[in-house]
Length: 299
Image (cartoon, rainbow, N blue to C red; front, side, top):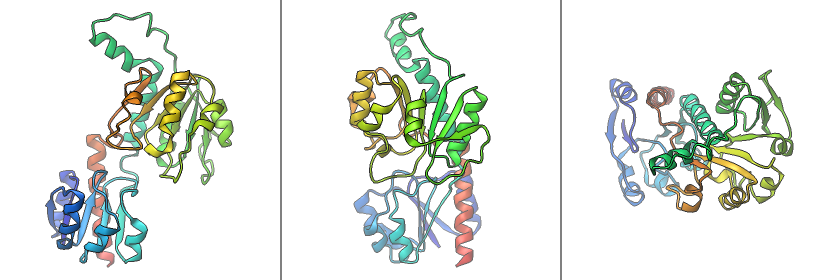
């Protein structure tokens, strides 16, 4: 069985697949190239960079499986693939801690103006008074929108930090005694900090309407989906002071082109690094490799 590793895979996962007798080709193809090349492969492993739309699936006449070395499968036309009998696999739990920790990195960066203070200091300014009005996380209310694996880990970290945690999720029954389930609008109005952990949706969850409901000066962190927030409305909220700051790891367009948002003094931003830790990549590679072998055995 010949597998294309399109976006790289930690060596631990590759070793598992090689030991099972699979032939691996590690190579990234541009979209038009992939449509031509995919016919030679029985399977493909992708991360975020490579998309697997219907055209690629149709061209992959030998395809038996498509694997996402990560949680979301938004970059795969998974319904179409499964309808054609192609297995679509992912590694849903392997990077949860890494994403949750990045959420807290952004929360702390916003609360203490770390990004702006770093830029100021590097430019030779000593603006202790300007950036000496930070706030503590302890005692503040964190609103978590989406309470899956990552949301639950974030809640535990927040409770350990001394925060009050409220949660909105349309599907989840509260299994955490330290958090309170609330309605969406209640979460918007009560939260000092908000973090999003939702799957891809057809429309933004946070638009101009929702931003108007927020507690003035709220901090928003998005390490989930770039389309979850209307970026134009977010920028307007930052400029008006309705939003006190934003921590962004994902964007509606990647790489992002909205430089006014990226360069805003109250924005902490990273280039989609949620799962990008050495530990997460090792866990992801092992989990996806094991899932691939299970799928092959099942067939």
